[in-house]
Amino acid sequence: MKTSTQTLCASVLPSHAQAQPEAQSASWSRLLGSSVRAALLVMAVSGIAYPLLTTGVAQALFAHAANGSLIERQGRIVGSALIGQQFTGPQYFHGRPSATVAPDPSQEGANIAAPYNAGLSGASNQGATHKDLSEAVAQRVTQYRADNALAADQAVPVDAVTASASGLDPHISMANALLQLPRVAKARGLSPDQVQPLLAQETEQRTLGLLGEPRVNVLQLNLALDALQPATSAVKE
Image 1 (cartoon, rainbow, N blue to C red):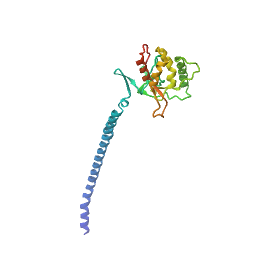
Image 2 (cartoon, rainbow, N blue to C red):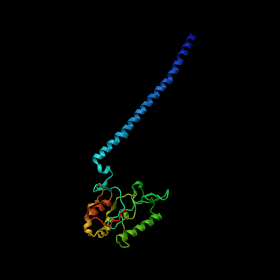
Image 3 (cartoon, rainbow, N blue to C red):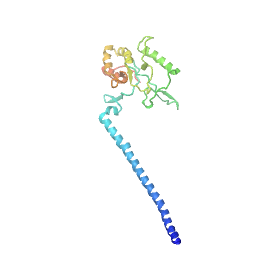
Image 4 (spheres, one colour):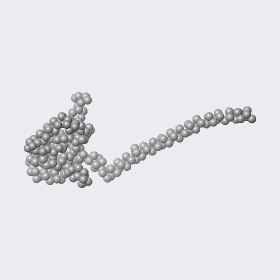
């Protein structure tokens, strides 16, 4: 009996040992298959279906905003309502200073000033006590007063002499716009009363009636000015 038992065990053990690797192999195959199917499902939902859905909804309900809030004049794109532009001529309202930069083509690794560079949005990151920032603001204050024929002790709006965090701010405050209005009107041979309605027309109120302050989109205001009376000697960069 003992001999037959030993013979039975000897015949069973090899087959059991052979079945165990086969079961493990089948288990790994099932795990791999389910993982691949799950990955493909996630890719299809999050990488194809969801983007197509959100793009379709955006194009159907908010096409202008979804396409960059672009501004067109005579069939030509002249800018975006979301990105400021650099105006320097006296017949234009000037935007908020921009601290954005661009790579210096003449020196590798160096940067040069490039106002409203949407490809490299950012601020100077200089603190309120930074010497360079203090000097830059003081210079801007002096220039702003000179450009707009203001008294030496006339208060200057903060947004007229400091850059925004993005460097792309397309708006200026109402206080800033009102101080520039006489200079713009004079440069165009208009009276302030002729420019004031355009300023009111382009003024954007607080978001939802609560957030932010009334503000003016500089590009849209300047385009409205050109529509009223084209500038013959514009200086715009």
